[in-house]
Image 1: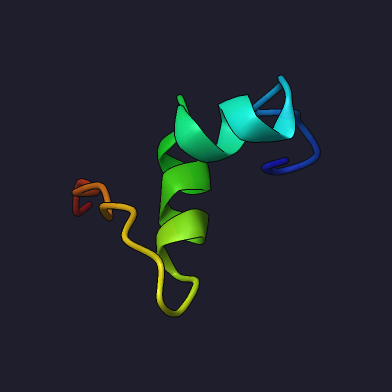
Image 2: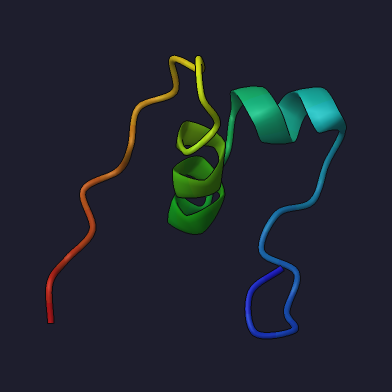
Length: 44
């Protein structure tokens, strides 16, 4: 969720392995020991 809105929906496997949302990928990448790539976020 972001600002009260659902941004990802699917099975846990789908969300963890095929995230469609930049915020979800950033959150997953913040977990220590994980190999997910951090998306490049625009500045501004």
